[in-house]
Length: 506
Image 1: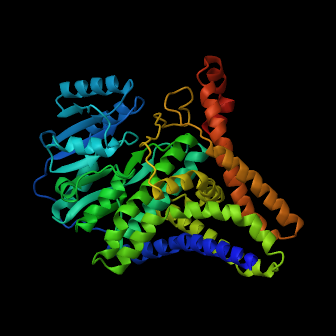
Image 2: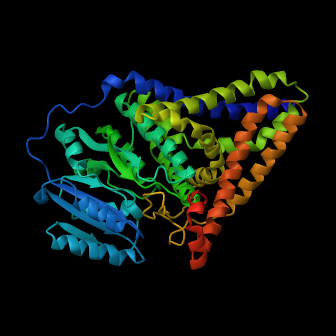
């Protein structure tokens, strides 16, 4: 009885993970099904409206000037544009930003440096505070890791000729995509979201979200939805759903690109993932009941459920990881045929579904998409390896544990020769790395167990888990150690030599 109860729990979790993974098939279907429904600009505005560009920054000494200079270079009539530098910094960034603002004000730009007495509400609080003095009827937001394109406003503002449009979002691209193995994998992960998911949701009439940057809001849409709020770590996702619940239409421009810098250091990447995972579950708890009770079409409700709760799959994946060995032992008494007709089809379909999703994202965005497919196995492993980090985030949201909004470190990494070692803002390692190491060892044992029992068909799946946990754990430790060594001039000099570039970049 206990044996079958255990296996029942295991398979329920497996099936739930499979459902979330299989949802990627549906996203691809919607993407291709609604190609003809992409947003079309019917006519341009006869008269351009006033726009405010908001630049929220917090301890961004390496990229603050790049951001401000690019924003001042946006092609838009000067008399219709004002720029707000919303600086909550506590380090040298303050002086850099103030000097930069003074410089561009001296050149005739309407740019203001705005500083609060405290960091209440974090980024959302800074944006809300800036709205008090924003002169524009429309507000463009750019995070510190972005480089606003010269034509960004000209490409987006005319869509607001439709009075029902509340927000226009552009697609992220990555200036440091080729920097390292880690950044290449991250870029493909993000492409899945920005090329397929956003597009599929928007073109098919489902809800999608502003991504906190590289988009333009109608200021009235922000106010009518209740403004920026700070009870979740994803204030952008929260506001997006509240605005769409109010009836505002969102537009996603897949082919209008906004360059950004993605994390080059894995602990910073894990911090970013933790924030996104926790914030999405917080938003689900906050808004899903209201959304499900609304008069919205069923298709919108179902997709919103999968969208907002998707990070639950990390927690399920972690539990599934722990249950792998006991389930194998338990089924020795049941027979391995059940493994072939249960586990393998679910795992195979889920793996193929996720791979297919990312393959489509690369095919739709890049001419050289075939050359990128070699990274897919490691992408799958990295997703599994993040399950410890993101499970903590999900549990924190479920049990209402308050945590600070932790920014993602940026180092102005644009070319392969650029270095982050020795710079401030390095990500921090935490005790979760011990669990990641343990799980890597645990799956090494599972592989051995499967081998000696001649269950060869399960070994490739077990290896994905093993590699993922070891990769995340060892890279977390290695980069912290390497970053600490970077403060020593001699070591920094030695590591800067050409024959060690790839090691450091990793």
